[in-house]
Image (cartoon, rainbow, N blue to C red; front, side, top):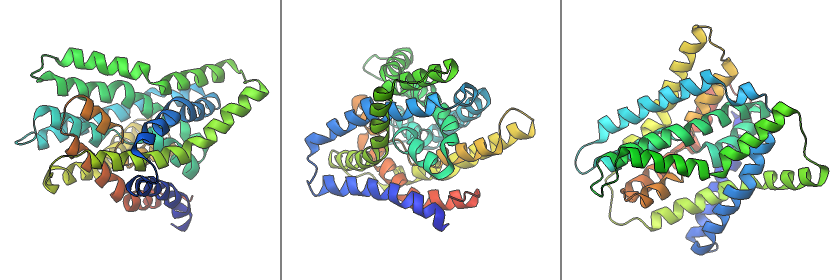
Length: 320
C-alpha cells in the first residue's frame, strides 16, 4: 500500500493544488482555458503519441478490450438513466449523469497515472478505452440527451455533433499517428523527438493541476443547490459499480479464452475506478443540461477516489 500511495498521492495532490490555486485566485479564471488548451493540444497529444509509437498496434486496438469496455459502458449508461430519470432530473440531465458515471478521466489523469503505477505497458489498454469513450460512449449519451430536446435537435443530430467533436479532438489523431509510427517502425528526428519528449513530460503535472482548476471553475458557475441524493448515487456508480462490472465482464472474457490478459483486466478495472471526466461539465453546459449536478458528481467522485482508487489498486495486487 505504501508503494501505491507514493504514486497516487502526488497525482491527487496536484489536482488539489490546482483547485486551491483557483480558489485563492493565485490562478486567474481567465488563465484556465489557456492551461486546458496547452494540455489538450500540445502536451497530452505528445504523451499519447509517445506511448502509441512504443506500443504494439494490437494492444492499442484490442477488440476484446474495446468490446468489454463498451459493453460495460452501455450497461452503466442505461442503468444510470433508469435509476435517475425522475423529477426533477429530465432526460437530458439523466443522460449527462450517465456520461459521468461511465466516462472516467482517462485522458488527463488515467494515462499518466496508470503508466506510473503499472509501467508503460499499461498505456495500450488505457488508450484503447480512451478511444472507445471518445467515439462511442460520449456520442451515445449526447444522442440520448438530444433525443427529447425541445429545441428540435434530435438524437441523430446529437450523435453527429458528438462524433464531429470527437474527430476534432487532437487526442485520437495523436494516437493514430503514434500507431502509424509503431507499425512502420519509424522514429522522429532527434530535435523533434526532444521537443515531443519535453511536451510529453509536461502533460502529467499540468493536466492534473488543470483538472483541479476546472473543478473549481465548474463549482463557481453552479447556480442553486443540488440535493446530495441527486449526485452522490451517481458518483457511487462511477467508483464502485463501474469497476466491478468491468471486472466481471473481463473475467468472463478471460474464462472464454478470448485474447485478453490478467494484466489488461487489471488496467481496465483501475481505469474504470478513476473519477469522472472533468470535461463533461463543459459538455453539459454547452448542451444546456444541469451543469450544477454534473459538476457535483465530478467533484464528489474526484474527492472520494483519493481513497477508493489506492484501495482498489491494493486489492487487485498492484505493487507500485
